[in-house]
Amino acid sequence: MKETSTSKQNKYTTSIEWLPILAYHKIGTQKELGITWITPSLFEKQIAFLHSEKYQAISPNDLTEAIFGTKPLPKKPVMITFDDGYESFYTHAFPILKRYGFTATIFMLTGYVGKWNFWDARLGWKRFKHLSKEQIIDLSMEGFTFGSHGLNHLFLTIQPHKTIQTELQTSKSILEDILQKPVDCFAYPYGNYNSKITQLVKEANYRTAFALTPSTQITNSEIYHLPRMGIYLWDTLKTFNTKLRQTGEMKFWIECTKNILINRLTYGNLIRFYANSSQLTKV
Ligand SMILES: [Zn+2]
Image (spheres, rainbow, N blue to C red):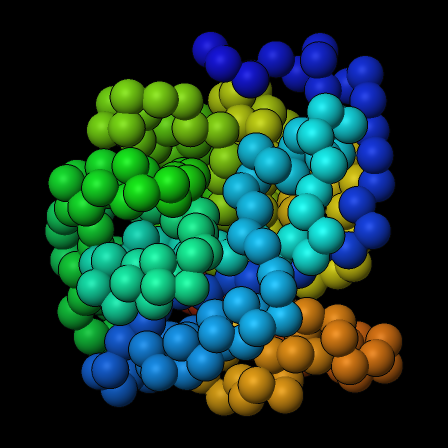
């Protein structure tokens, strides 16, 4: 399969000076619990800002090529990523990104292609639809990259070995069947991973994997837990700019710390909830 050989990867390494990798979830106008959704107008302001600052969107493949020294990154690179693959990406984010000449990477929850988000139903969150097969193909043809986010949005670190393998391998095959091309990037549901999970991600022939913890470090050793900066409902253009590391190191690290704390508070409680429930054995 194209570009999945790790032997080629290990020959070269270049450290990336700085690359903001932004993590979005839902774009919508429907108010809901949580802070990981943002409105289309806020999203447009952020994308217009990236455009005015002359950022250029890159894909996970562009990043690996830069790390392994085969192709340099543009002068001001940014990676825009969306987790879960909601239909609202197609209706709200896609037209905005297209208008400003950006592409993005969508980490698709492949057990829910064209379906409602029953995977988080127990939390009482609102119903949202996921991207359909046709929308995925359309976005891919428009230059958007698809990666896997697993099948069922599970906390992988508390799953049995076989379930983890199925989540990684079957989700990859489903997307490859839809797109008719290799899928080689993965985003950990809830940003939840450990060394065992990263090893299984490698064995499933992914070239990169994305976490939810922000950091400035991007080298060969981070390639299976790439740092991402979450963008939230309360972000202003000022905090957005800080998250791009454009307003000084101190402010940037404060935003990183806030991001880490939010992830711990949100997902730390959830993982305890799931670990104590039947989710543990659900495939
Ligand atoms: Zn997710």
